[in-house]
Image 1 (cartoon, each protein chain N blue to C red):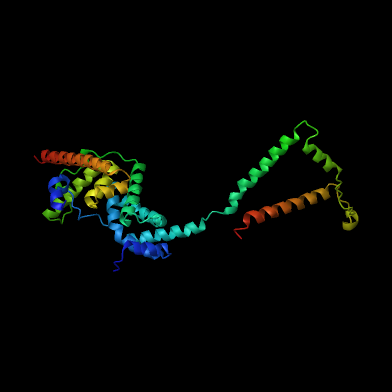
Image 2: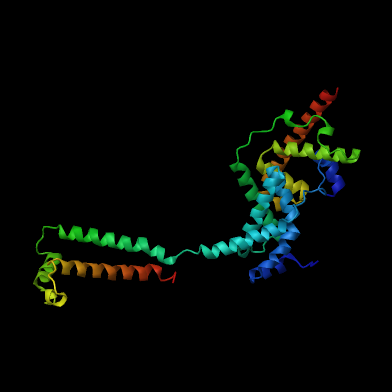
Length: 191
Length: 139
């Protein structure tokens, strides 16, 4: 495995060696895909968005001025592609009743108790994510999953750092509220 | 702020595990690279034909020339430059070579046939000129 920095491969691609882009895709694909999943909510669309984002990145690689890291620049492309993709589709909002009532509904048959708990939490967070706006999902994804700073998120999303903090606070509040509501409903259901 | 501090402060960290991210599906990199190759090929094929850009310019110039000539010719001022030029043109005698086609081909042709042939020849030249102009890059 080659551990040279992104800049090396970017320069190779810009010099005409198209295959060098493979290293960049391999290195960043999971984070790009994860962000796309968080914003659009399903793996099929996320795959399409991620591929589209990498192709866009390849096409505009010459415009990358190296003022930020390649990952930040790439996240910006993914964020914009995913948000505009979600805006373009017509999908009704999820209802509280849409969330599986029991943990057993969220998991496979061969899971252990810990795995079941983990699956339940994942389903719960994904459900809450789908109830907030696509911009908020992107910010949550970048902050909690990609563990980026609010300054980096501001660069990606194209808003001020204080605005990121405000949006993050609101999104967090909404998600916590949704999660608490679901858990409350589930308690009632099990009683 | 380290992770444990973040965890205590932020309730969402009780539900979110940043280490468990969604992994890209198998063959993702290959699909992206195939997409890029297709994109590169199609950009070569769909390279814009520069001569096509000339079409609106040329037609625009022709229309402008026609409008201009219509405006200038419709003027009632008989002493205008256009009319004096037209007068000069009337004085130029364009005579076709006096060729006896009846003798050449053995039978009589209608009188207008020579004008038709000349017209066709002029159209052929015009077509040839346009073809050279607009199909130059494709050749």
